Length: 180
Image (cartoon, rainbow, N blue to C red; front, side, top):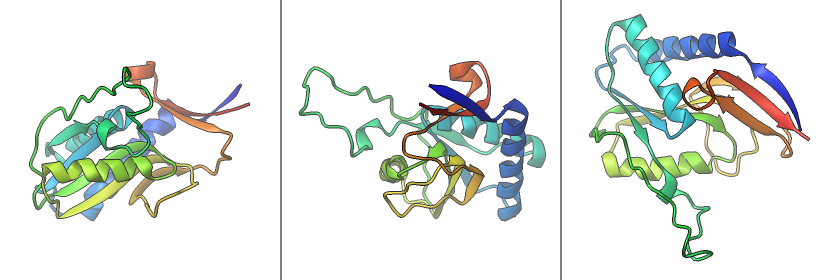
């Protein structure tokens, strides 16, 4: 298995800063913004965006982490009754009714994770608008989903794997492509 680092820590943080600037630029008022990070690494990226937006705009936007485990369409509970998924829910409940939600994930691939996240968000109310932030868009969509903010477009083959690494889980910020 070979590994190629395509985004190092400096580029990673520069990308977070650029996306934060884009969000601020697109929203004249940040009063109705809620940032939602898809667990696991999407939530880490969401927290980085929240912190950077606070530094740049001097406003603390509400944010929470969202577990989409039970909303996924690729979990088959009938295969093995002893292996039930663990659902951790959200880190807090924030009503998103009539709010602009910034949904954050690490990699956009088939679109199925985002579909599940949209289903999960319905439990928090009806958002005015949902925008999608993706650190890496690798293509190969199965569903008609497009990101509003993209850190980097990376054309990949189906044999390759894109790994986003964060300090919380991996002790560093970087993005790697793994191939055989």
